[in-house]
Length: 497
Ligand code: MLC
Ligand code: AMP
Image (cartoon, rainbow, N blue to C red; front, side):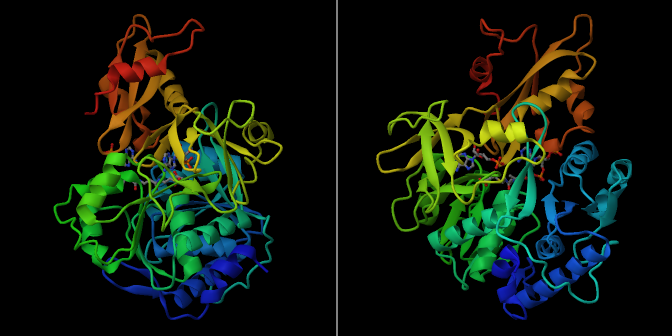
């Protein structure tokens, strides 16, 4: 048996029901998808990939990318999907750290990735949306390779507040148990059509949206990326949508967003970043629907959700999922009384297996009793509703992407004219938060704030680049010498409107 394959893919073998629907309406059936995945799995075996080997992916969103992921699950190969915005320098770190055997890239990225793949001794092949590229499915399918519940399925890299990115190891059952819970909780069934506009290299678009659809035997309208007009056009054909808050604020700017446009929908889900209560209320006023907000993270999949039938309370992330324990603690792990703010900890079958090759980091965040320290600050009401009130970790979430200030600061500090820097997140009307850099130049050096983005663009994905830069004589510090980011955030809070 193969734990994930048997639940997600095996039931659909030979089925003529639609799985992926392209924006032009063309449907790929479940049967054709499973067959394609089986043949990509054979191609992986032919390429020498063995169960447990790591396969890195930097692919544009497509049916083929999803089939490659399904193939990896079938072949027992651990896949690591990478944001397509990552630079070659960033990919270099991931493939080395994961010890990847192979890197599958979109042909458009192959040129920039070839040198790092070669230097790291990783085989580079290409897969293009529509099926082109050097990596082609074999003529026949590979029988599913046996994988147990605790075997690893995927590494998802997540940056740290200090130091390097960490590969969160997710087992077959981490993914399956969570998808099962969500299908039941959110009432997904075969008649559902999910409007899918998220990327599929992160938890939200891949594990939450796609695995729920697969388990329910539903279909999804598969958009290459979020585009408000396209979503408006296709909304009448869908029954559900999952998105980050930026999706909802952008759709609210569409004049066509009316109860009639959303008549066919039964559920809108939001997560990955805080949804403003105001957005929730505006959405209800415009469409008649109450957005269901849920809360999760890379290491844990989903932890909390507002209810399907009960009260969807704006500004909260609802209650712990069935089978998941959530507690608000002081720093030592002692649970605080309801109503007090503390660090949110979670335990359950969804919680990851640790960080790849980083036992000390794992031990810092995963307690011996299985509780994971989320780094989010929260308060829990008497009725178990959780409100995320802030972050203990220095993290900016912009349009649903995580940006770790320490990583951006390290790159800025390496520039010749820079003495030191502080990177902060500020409220942004479109992205929720956006990044600002406050920089102290070296004595005698000529500051070049206008050239900052260009100077960093080889090193950092563009979504991490500061959208505002200020050069200052010194950074505010407390008596311990620590930079006072709260003071900087307060001083600049209106910067992005
Ligand atoms: C794009 N850009 C961003 C950005 N996305 N900048 C900051 N933050 C972002 N999120 C930049 C690009 O680099 C580019 O800059 C410019 O904006 C326009 O690029 P684009 O591709 O046209 O952007 P757009 O399509 O508008 O994308 C915005 C977005 C997208 C919000 C639709 O970022 C998105 O789909 N976000 C979803 C992220 C997600 O899936 N998160 C889930 C993580 S899982 P330049 O300089 O090149 O012009 C997780 C766990 C959980 O968190 O609980 O779910
Ligand atoms: P990631 O590491 O990309 O998985 O991001 C996870 C982080 O996103 C969490 O630790 C939270 O800080 C944040 N997050 C996810 N969902 C929500 C939500 N509904 N409200 C507030 N923050 C959220």
